[in-house]
Image 1 (cartoon, helix red, strand yellow):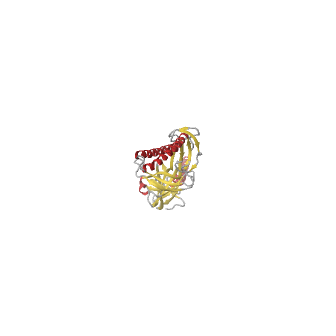
Image 2 (cartoon, helix red, strand yellow; image 1 turned 135 degrees about the vertical axis):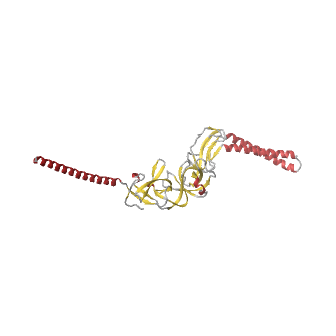
Image 3 (cartoon, rainbow, N blue to C red; image 1 turned 60 degrees about the vertical axis):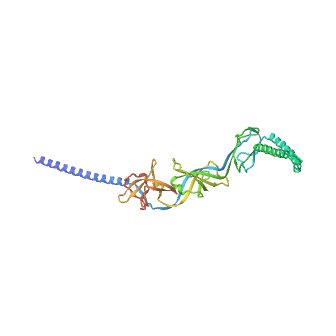
Length: 360
């Protein structure tokens, strides 16, 4: 009986020890789990850098895309139906105004011109003979006036023939650079046949568009800078020559033309230009471009909430870009603190930690 009691009490003691040991293990495990979770939560909190945004003075610049147009440009065509008997230019040659480019056959008109000159000389001699007779009242006024009329007609005939001869001489209408030749010796051309084209590229007209909100600020005489991929880093300076009096009702933009001097003939018609127009200075909120995220056509930033230790996503509208920074025109105000580094790890209302270099 005593032996049974002893074993019962021993079993109860062992059970108590086992329960106590289990409780200790459970407590230790729970404590370790809480520590691990705390470490994990700490490691999962994004570390970001923030910056307080203040207004800065920037150059108010607008940009546009323009296309180059020659100062003057024309297709040179034949004026008569004749054979080509002379070609006096090379493809791509720069020529002065009035240079003979192509000669068409004019033998027939040269012969007619000689005949007309001989006839005029005869009629002038006859008029010269009749003049003193008319003055002496020996010949009638009718005969005298008839002689004068014949002389006048002879001069008119010479003018007509000379015009026909000039039409068979194709000249450069102004100084410029010629395109490729489209005819050969012996070709029979007719009015409208393309011979070549010529461009005056001493100046290049650059046509571009400006948004409606900038229309009152753009005036003739303002300076512009244009760039082209063919000349990286080179800015060509021009002047606005005209602003359209109309706003396009679809695009809400206005046509603007700038003239860019081209003395070295580096620029060519048809080139694509980036046009920059400076409109004075203004105050703006500029933030690093890397602080801006995009979702489709929507751009947004993250504002830092110091009191809550988290961030808020804010949709913004952007403006001018310059030197790795971009202007925020809507969605932010002066004094806001934004995340500039670490934005890829963020979402709305996410807690964050501030890294070194943050300026609040």
